Amino acid sequence: MTPASDQNAALLARIGIDRIRAQETARRRRAFRRALPFLAPATLFVVVFLLLPVGYNVWLSFTRWQRFQGWDEFAGLANYFRLAGNPFFGRALANTAMWVGASIVFPIAIGLALAMFFRRMPGQEMFKTVIFLPRILAPTAVGVMWFYVYAPDGLLNRGLSLFTDEPVRIGWLFSEATITPAMIATFVWQTCGLVMVLLLLGLAAIPRDPLEAARIDGATPLQIFRHITLPLLAPTLVMVTILSVLAGFTVFDLIWVMGSSYPQQRTLSLAVFMYFEAFQKSGWAFGAAVAVVIGLVVLVVTWAQTVWQARVERRLR
Image (cartoon, rainbow, N blue to C red):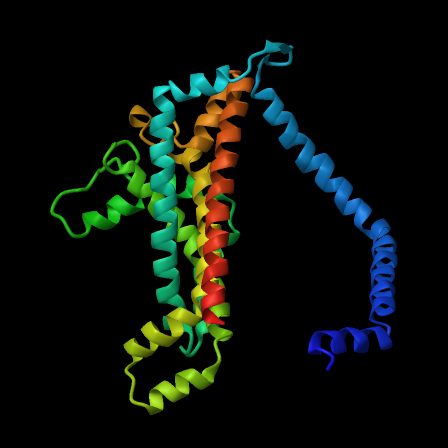
């Protein structure tokens, strides 16, 4: 008796499976060749404006390049050793980690709360537009606006004076204890609207059948949110987390406008440190090394979150 595997092979041979595979491969190759002219402009744009500058920056970090004078000599890892011994680098790294943590926790928590609140609220479009409006403003404009809000005679202190017997004149951006929380609050004010919109889209994609079945079974709203809504919203939450991490690592405008030169460089971040070393002190090669470190950290964190997202999606299937 012929084994099943031999029977399958004979059957595939009779229907010409090899010929079908060859035709499919040839069809895909023709389709790829036809697509090349349409891919060429985008590919050229990516190579010229992304890959080449990134490659040149990496090469620059291994030299002693001076401002518009070319590189004097190949420096190897000297800039990276200098970076590791720089005391301000550790401060910038710690501050950036704090910004990343704040950009994950507060915008996502507030955005999720707003999304759940506005999901079925009458007239929600107007409120959602008002909350999302700060996102379309330039970060520099937001920084300047809130700089005057936090001023000693600004709107915040005037509002607090209504609840006290004496005028309040707190220098929110001039005190080491308050400057970073004040800037983080501004950052959350600008970004929580986008997070809310993304989470609303995720909530709209959740099927209604599991929710209705849970209500019929007598589940409370908290139980439905914890055991059904939150797990099904996990892929969207992972995506929002990745975007929040990238925003935390690359925040520059707000810090530079509101607190780049304030108390003891308490607000120094990696992005501000890179700009200061490259453009203020003309240490272009050293600034390039800082940029490479930022890029590597972002790549590692993004890769870890992508792996996490893939695992979450596999568990939900």
